[in-house]
Image (cartoon, rainbow, N blue to C red; front, top):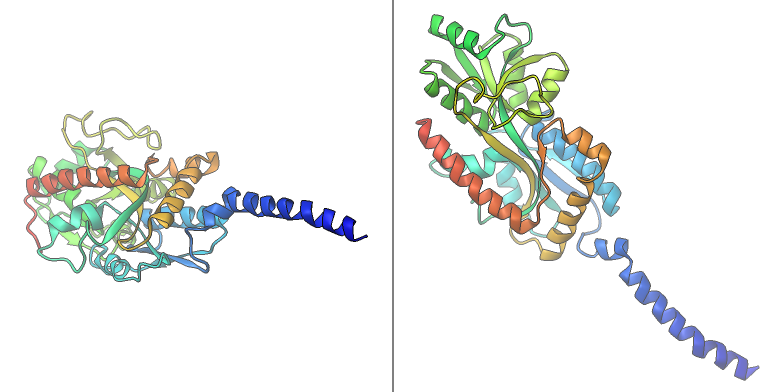
Length: 327
């Protein structure tokens, strides 16, 4: 009887040992090693219903399924996204707070403000880009304006014409459009794009520029009409909307929406999150939903960082060309 027990124990220990090794090597187990337990907060520096918010909620839902950890959206809108981004920059770098943001806060604001309470480059780590967006010229759906040419003529006839914006991207695109067309129009700032959209629908101003992530849902709901998109080629999600280039204007305004982390977050979590985001970007159902917001981009953290560097250069030049003075 003793020999039988020793025999079983002799062969059982290696089996258990290899079992633990295989369990540790299981992708799901390894994947969670870089992710803290408990809920992870994703700060969105814009209001509910904005393009960034819509994408953040989709990504959060998918990350929760993929990683088995709760992801919670917290909207902190205001001051061109400065309120929310500052909160994310000051969060403890323990992996429990992330930032889903866009062009305005990271690649535009540094050229729009004399000083910021955060450093767009030093305070954050690029995690994963999600989509590349384009600015879209919008009017309310019930407007008699059917084309860019008609809009220009309408503004020329009305010295009190105005345009609204709820983001840095919208402000730069609006100012650039006015300069290129030699129009005089009053710029009306809003806390966030959803509020500006409400007033555009209400007829308080003539037009506004929205990123494609916000523009497409407004088109599909029948609230707004798109007149032109500021990109090289027509967008698959807006095939009937001409580019400015088609209309004889060399005007491109391309941005992004992506996930960042406070600077001190570990390489392990950044890599886990990047892999999880890139995996969800391959799901047909996700691609179908994101395809309505822009061009899906799958990048490593390093590639995303290089992309942001290029975006800073492009937006810095656009802001200077539009003669926008720093606030």
